[in-house]
Image (cartoon, rainbow, N blue to C red):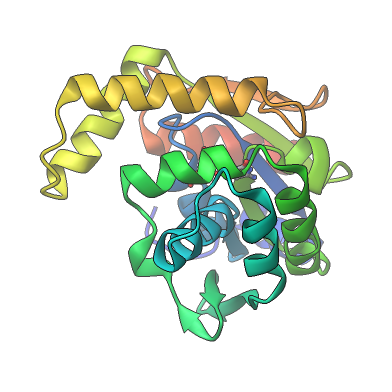
Length: 234
Ligand code: DC
């Protein structure tokens, strides 16, 4: 693949589809979603970044995630929005691009905790729907197919074995120079899985129409090619 648009990808581009990708942490969602968006020349939206931005904001303001009233007041007064940077939508909080602060384990865990709160999900819902309103988007998260874009044209659910997902996260953090022990990553991932799957509002689960792909023994390129074939046949 030399980056030139091939016929079928051109067709998908013209169709302005909404493609949703849900799945647990470490399933390969982010890497695959970005690559797929690029191949289709679609916008890419990482909705986890919105929940992470809320986690970042409450950490910065020193508000406890258990103090729901103060948390809601803080969020009502905050301007959280998405802005296009090339083909990627980035999260801004009160005019500041917070993207660079969001990818830590601590923020991931707090994001998972506050994402169980219905009011927070409600506040973030219109931001996500507005971003997808014109189509031509690949959007990843936990409830893209089930709640945010239930009428999406193509819905995927990526999964992988727990050990593979822990290993991937460990490698990602090690490569970044974050020396977090394997045992801590495993513990945090299990906690996050449990929270994301068992919450009452918008729990992580595949939409009944979603194509489920187990990425445990697949390369990124293989997953992207498999998805492109499904999109082209849709
Ligand atoms: O995908 P991520 O690791 O950046 O997401 C961080 C947390 O945000 C995740 O553990 C649960 C929450 N989240 C969510 O509840 N719904 C989404 N659509 C995306 C993320």
